[in-house]
Length: 211
Image (cartoon, rainbow, N blue to C red; front, top):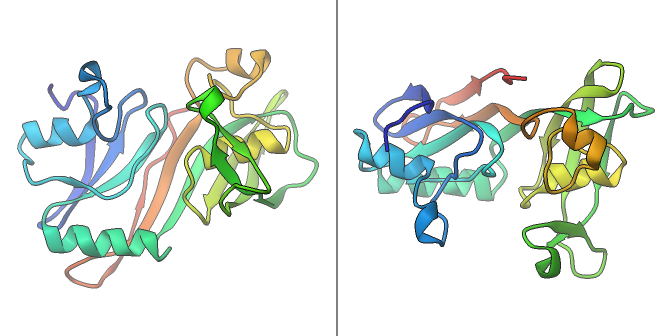
């Protein structure tokens, strides 16, 4: 597959920083017809050494970093594991939060009966923490900045749902009005800050949301 609408924001000997489009897997799926993904496209178009470090959901767009050698992959993976990276997402959520900012500290787990959904579970869920801030208020929705401290699957989507403000266009978690309000999931990884695995330089990448 060609790179198509995959945009390279930065590249050097150690890493690639990509603006991943919506409706593209980060890594291959289990089914044979789910082989098309970001890492495969890069490997087939001039970057055979590309290695995934972290993932974005299929529907989520925005900044994702890949390593170009084993040592860089190990170091970047460690930074994500030890929460030394900083991430921010831009989203559109349904309704009007009473406050302008806040935090959501609710444990999450995968829910096999409703796969691939995740749910809040105080007994078996894993710790998950998200900070949110309203950037703009509109008639029926808000533009918000979401900052995940942990990196659980579907964390931002389930956390915003849990406080009554599902993301627009979210086919898994939004109610009918929020789902119909936008033709795609309104979640975009808009900022990533990390330490370069070779030089030690602190780097910050930004990419505005397309919605």
